Image (cartoon, rainbow, N blue to C red; front, top):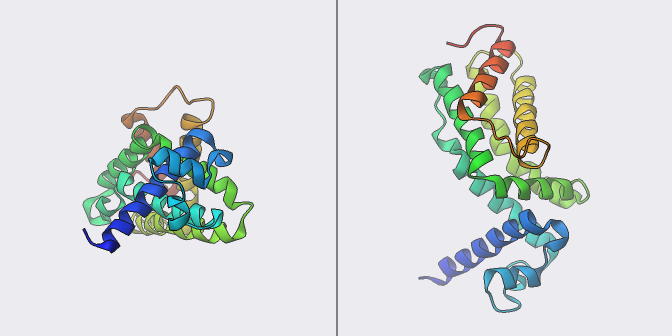
Length: 199
C-alpha cells in the first residue's frame, strides 16, 4: 500500500469516526481526542490529519457528501428518456435508503448544517457539497417538463428534508414510511408541479 493510499485511508477513518460521533454525541462530543479513542488510533493521529477543529469539520462535510452520494446512488438515477415513473422509483428508493440505511449520516448532516449557520467558513463547504444534489435534482425536474425548475427543485428538497427530519429526529421517528408511501407522496408532488400526471 502506497503512502498516499495509507494517508487517504486514515483520513477516511477519521472522517467516518467524526460522523459517527456527531450522530451519537452531537457537536459538543466531537473532539480530536474523542476521534482518536473511538477509531482506536494513537493519540494525536486525528490532529495529524486535520489540525484544527475547522479542518476536522470540513473533512467531515466532504466525507458526508461522498457517502450520501453513494447511499442515494445519484450516479444511478435514470435520465428523462427512461420515463417519469423510473425517475420517481429512483427518488423514492433514495429517500427510503436515507431513512433506513443512512439514519446515522442524516443525524450527522443535521449537526453539521446547524454548525454551518454559525461558521461562515464551514457554510461554504456545506453548500458546495449540497450543490451536487441540488443541481442533479434541478436537471431532473427540468427534463420532466417543469416550467420553474429552480422553484420545483426547492419544493422537492424541502419536502425530502422535512420527511427526513420528522422520521429521523422528529415526532415521527418511530414511524418510517414504506417505500410505496414515499413514492406515492412523490407522485402527488410531481403531478402538482407539472400540472399533469407524469408519464
